[in-house]
Length: 266
Image (cartoon, rainbow, N blue to C red; front, side, top):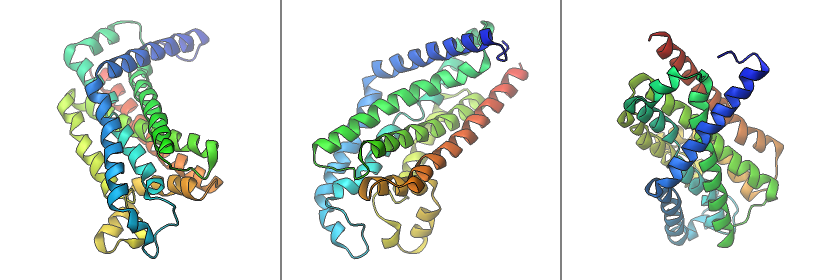
């Protein structure tokens, strides 16, 4: 299908929306996949806030009224990460059960095959992000940057899901195997814990600090946290959105190239 004509673009958009709707409905029907992404980060935040409340008194720790404010971006990232690989898992599942081949045989453009599932993952991530932020605010957390910063915080989380989802789709296209895609989940969580998500890098030492400072998760977490703790800053907004956007462009481009090669080889 040609996308350089108005008719082709409209049809591709409709196909993308249809696959996005299918992805969202499939995700919310499986509450076992959704609930851990909400319950676990909130439980961990409650435990950390209770156990590490005095940590905020350490010299060099960012000025905060409560550890709850500090841990908000980490909990948000954990929550959306639970479903971040779903775009790749769904694609691998469709390849395994033959649905992908049926779509190929239909007049469906190539891009919607990827973007529909990514759109579904992003929509679910946005809903999770809003819910997590609302719960934190109900329990006393404050976002110094105001409503605009809140939108940026959630948007950054959604872009992270896009980046991880793109990587998952690359693995799905290359392997056609759900287990291979799900194998990225421990890697995602390890990267969160080996970042500044739960502790500032200024108070780390040795090799762990070097790893955390080089971790792209830290490059996203730190500006998001400053928007929450210190207030609005255009430089922080640019970094909070720019880093995951660049990662998303890289992984989605890789997925498109992998899809073109797979379809070109068959």
